[in-house]
Amino acid sequence: MGNPMKIRAASKDGVTDVKVLMSHEMETGFRKDASGATIPAWFIAEITAKLNDKVVMQSQWGPSVSKNPFLAFKIKGGQKGDKVVISWVDNKGDTRTDEATVT
Amino acid sequence: MKSTMKSIVFAASLVCASGIAFAADKSWGSGADDVAFQAMLKSGFREKGIAKLTRLDQDATQAFCSDPQLVASKDGAAMAAKIEAENMKTVKWPTDGVWLGSHAAGEALAQSGRGLTSTDTADTPNGGNCYNCHQISKKEISYGTIGPSLYNYGKNRGNGEDALRYAWAKIYNAKASNACSNMPRAGHMGIINEKQIKDLMALLFDPASPVNQ
Amino acid sequence: MMKQPQVIGAVLALIGFAAFTGVIRAEGDNSIESIEKYREALRDGNPAELYEAQGEELWKKKAGPKNASLEACDLGLGAGVTAGAYAQMPRYFKDTDRVQDAESRLLTCMSTLQGIDTAKYVAAAWASPEKDELNALVTFISGESKGVKVTMALDHPKTKVMYELGKRMFYYQGGTHDFSCASCHAQEGMRIRLQELPYLPSQKGAGVAWTSWPAYRVSAGQMWGMQWRLADCFRQQRFPEPIYASDVTVALSTYLAATAAGATMDTPGIKR
Image (cartoon, rainbow over all chains, first blue to last red; front, side, top):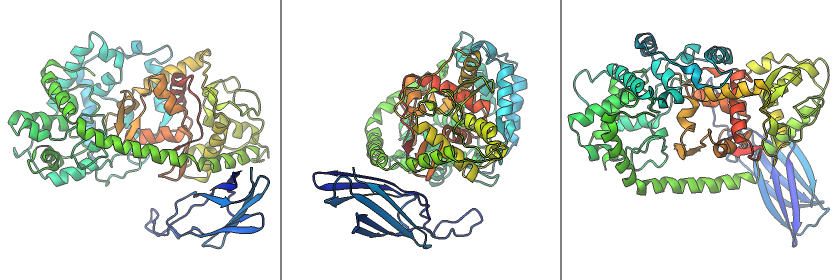
């Protein structure tokens, strides 16, 4: 269970603007530590976004996304009071889900 | 050039030799007198890596220039002249009389800001820190403005003896020509060695150097 | 800086020279513009908010031998009052008879309220679990002063002394490179490489600096409080390391904050 995400979702003129700040090290697997050993890759691999119960976005990420990623996207539709649910799975199998109410 | 403590010990010995008395206490507000300040200083730092507590000890130049009121006072000009003269005495000219080295090596040295920090080791090659403060070649746009631009340095001055001597002394000990210059005393403090100074000289003066294109 | 007659000729040559390079300086300025745009884009999703949330959790979490939270900690506005407290620090505290900045005060509260031995927090490396906690806490506290004007109570004699000591420290040259804070921060309109340097002896410059830290440093992926910021300045100055929350650091912060008085806190910030 990773660290909590911060999700903001606001609806205006039929479009819901979603902004997500995720807490994750996003280690590329190319860096070496002080002793010269490679730091293992550790990154968010898949993201799923749902508006209420409907999946509206899926995304596959790789090690090129940097630490504490910020994700912003728009959903066609959605209104105040709806639920936005964001889930991620990383390459180690750890997962995190958070939700927010659309304002 | 590997860091050496020899020049720093030598520099510290200038404190005793200078004979300049400082009225530092008068320059600062109530409570910030020498005794109180030194107590705060000594108890406020810990040594880390190669950065020892002796780095907090000042030589005559540093003590003078740490006091802007003293520097600006009516005695300041005379004191500054004395400081410059003493720093000038430390300048070591090239041992073989050759002024210029490799401008490519000079550019690499000017780009590096490494060395002598608390996270460096004694083996870390020291850089010249030059681009932090100066524009140098036209191609490098990531340059600082704390010091004047050095672009076209040699082209504008020519390679006469006077220009070469002035620049060499400036790099070796910047305080020889300006008592409270912001520029480090690269040669005198053992930051870079003679070969490296020649490389920086080539960067500035060699007609083939990117600086003079 | 005093200049002697024999070098005035060289100075005039350099001034004329600087005017000639006006065209080349414009290239650097375009880079500054692009960097400003990048900074604007960064502000939207500031990872500092993650640290703020962590800090708030730590503030409320029962910890230490006394199994207590920090919720009774007095940051100068009364026990547990976090709103606006950072904007009035450093300040004098009667219970410790000392002037303290936010990070120093956090140590006091961890010790007195929670019974934690803070020596290892002080000694721990910058990127350690102990310092992570302190960085998260100070980020949270600073966020509680977002939008609040900096006001400094300089009436207590100890605060005045710390201000003067901080000012003297600002100009103190040392180390292999003769650097003081003033070497970079006591001239208007300067930059180191492409990083602009605020002129700290003025209200405007000190305001820019004091109100933007703690900040998330994108290039390092790290959350820095002012203690870390000061320590890294000293590292670049080739000084030994300042002891965490020592009087040297609090004195400098007192000088900065007092000079910045009237500016509005914009913390936690975000930096390149």
